[in-house]
Image (cartoon, rainbow, N blue to C red; front, side):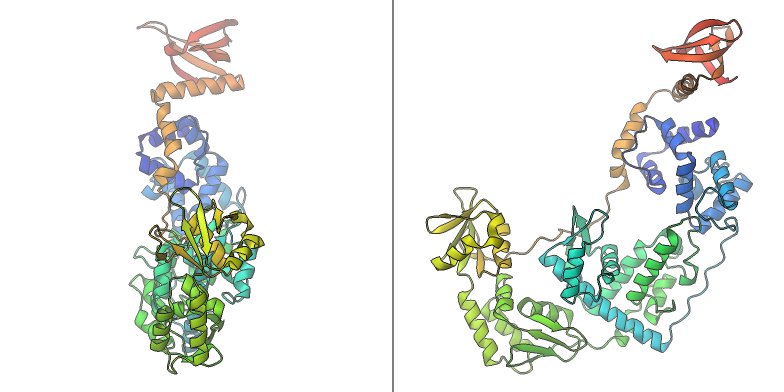
Length: 577
């Protein structure tokens, strides 16, 4: 054990920072680990619990290579990179003990007895039938529309995350009641797909839409699916990806990580996400458009386009202030229509309703009466009905009666209106108490920033407009991430820990010697110490180690039955008695 620790510590010290960070990432090392030096790191990595966690992270191919290395005394580079074997040599003894425990069914949670068996070839994917293909295409259409609704909701108000990282129950309820998702549990698959494709990113305790997510919303159903499928493939664990960049056949997923007790549940969740997005059919068969994804040759978007219903670009506007889309409306048109109307039903034929509130929200979001009319004339097969035209006029005439601007002479934000009675309503509105509005002459003043105050008034349904520094109306957007989120580089995550290990410095042999002496003193062990008395003479003492400090070792000489004190600088070797 001591020899293994020393060998591993020496090898760890020889790695560059990137390789060291990669190893720590593989092994799940905490960035806050309190290791003093590389010997502490080696001791922790060879601890049985740490080895068990590493074995649970190895897929069947890696486990097979690890068992073979234990037999042949030649470790594959992958196994060495996990810190489980000597470079170019045998598996460390503590690792062999844990492998034996796993193979015998002890020490790990329900390990299979066939750990040492060579992984069988993944079965070829089974093509989906015509009925399964049609069902998968329908699920793609539904999932794409649902995720778009979730992203739109998150653009309006970021989703709140719990301490465990899941979306809060309140947001699940809100999305369910709005029709964005069919049931609260449906949200997990959609969020997982959105995170994998970089459409969403967590910022603190909120889940916000990225710039990539906004671009995704403007794409058609086929483009949306392609982005989700590619993100799904890239996010899969290495054991499910083939060397060619494809995906292992679903029949082999369950046994990919045989020593991981959490893997069966995770494999089931990954398969469920794949089925929801039509990457796999319901029975694990593969639709035509996913075959290239599985084989690593690319996506067949033409096959998917042929299976989906054709998107339309025209609607019927009706006198009862509703709009009817007789088929799936092109996503970019649907997005803009929903800026000024509320969708009442969602299917291949959808209905939308116009109200003063929905049109006012569109005006707040940057539309104008003229831009709304131009858009509806281009979209409608029936022109603009007079009742709808009237609602647009009256809403636009009232919109902007409340303005919000920053005060150039102070850090305050000013709220003004030509209607003093409207300001009276604003200042007593309980929903606006958090922004701290107070009357100052003919205006209201708040110390809250302009943008935040603008959205507070807009959410409270006031006809508000933001003004820039020149007094001109300015369209504001709610907060989104500036770009697609990327994981923090492993080197940055472990920078403090690696820096601490490097700072321990010193001569490796001297550091190891001092470590052995510390352990001997801690356990009151009897050790054989070889000391350099002079250039030509060494002496050996059998000591019961009792103390270490000031550069000296203290112990009772078991042969002479006297107390001895030896300078550590003179000790050349230590071994158990």
